[in-house]
Picture 1 (cartoon, rainbow, N blue to C red):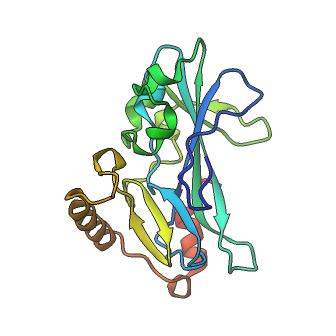
Picture 2: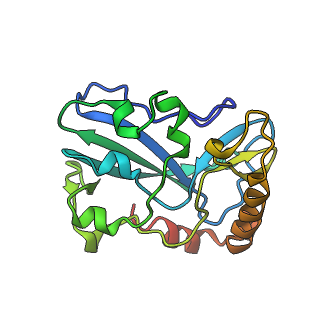
Length: 220
């Protein structure tokens, strides 16, 4: 799904592989303030911590493959990696009934951005449900919990977006009225403030890059 243009995209399943059912992404800022994003852009980053959508990975014949890629900043002409984007692709061997899987008769566009997220990935790896790509030219599928390279235990959780130069926690639309007047917005505001207190972000000028690279991109 896309992350710009003022809309929250759903997982994409346009692929030549008949077993791919959905793809979703999330971005880890690695403690860096994303002030390279234009104030006019609305960019959904999701959660900083890697996660899976339980309804898509827990079904019969279902599994997921996760891959991380380094992402640079728009204002860094050197092209150095600063952020990490995680792509999780969901596969199923069998007939796919999207509305039955997500439990919503209206279809995926009403529910994808608001699905439950599970950050406890160990159980999915040990259960043979979550894999990742190994190194080398062949990029073999890996499923050994001890060597899982994307274990991130800190970072913003929930669904976040960058807008007007600030980070915003997205509300659960399923609990918001059509005119967006809801007492739940107070809860969202409180959760946003708490999340940013617990996850202070630094400007790139405050970072010693070599140490930062070793800490954040040791999996490369």
